[in-house]
Image 1: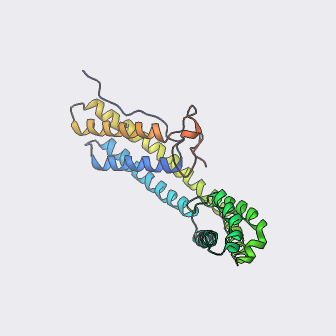
Image 2: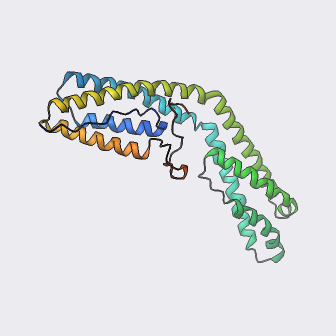
Image 3: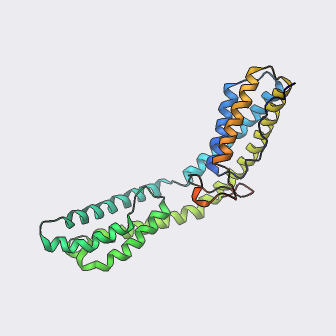
Length: 255
């Protein structure tokens, strides 16, 4: 008799928070799409869903802790100041009066050297703007002649405010929120392993049930994709690390 296909039983604890969440959300959807007529399986799925709901709540709190309203507001104001400074310098560099354009030329060179994009994460953008302003303020006379010294100083003050808010957020909130997420993930991992075990057992005992075969096949495909693109591989170069906003987890799911 042909052995039924099985879902690999692996630990998913080392995955980054976002990848862990997305993968288990996929498992949740799979178990909603297919219902196996087995009480043990149903109980395992129900316990998994309850565990995932707690992870879902903790993960959303984690996301919220990374984007507080004060930090978002300060970042938006900083971005507007930077865009205003950058665009005004570019405009002056093309000014038809040669003396004005000459004042703008060294300023534009500094702007171009840093190539700052406001889509960067808070910490990276803060560091880039700080370094850029150090270079830019060396041309205080040119900035003053163009009426831009006050804008550069306002940008420096707002950038300092963003950095202070980042430090406050990290100190006051992230440790607690990550602790809650870590605990929720651990419960989800146990519940997920139970779902895999009972799904495999049902498929093994009922190889003629098409819904079980399809569920196992799809869950295995999902797992293979997750394992390939989301699980940290010590042999993989850091240059090929999958995109994401948080690093892969060590042996225990901590940041």
